[in-house]
Image 1 (cartoon, rainbow, N blue to C red):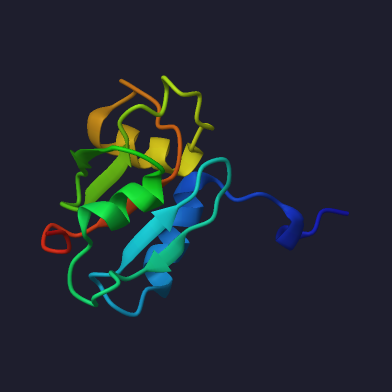
Image 2 (cartoon, helix red, strand yellow):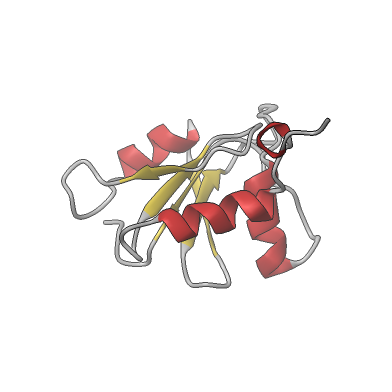
Length: 117
């Protein structure tokens, strides 16, 4: 017998569920590679993410893509070159904005336009 709790969610369901649970509409998220986990995050100073914080989340130099909903998706600009793990949820967000043009690897962070220095 199949238990709904044991069934894997699609990346879209995971993202939709995380957005429904957010208490602050400007909530930022860390999306680790390889899974379906969405972790709410806030800047260390409570206002803006520094470049060093963003680099810490993605594990290296950052690249920015602006998503359809206006949020910023920060990813490791060398992720494919250094063999980072596939990120299905970040790829779904990318493809929702840019089509099937690419896949995302490595951890990403989603911020709002005014959350970075």
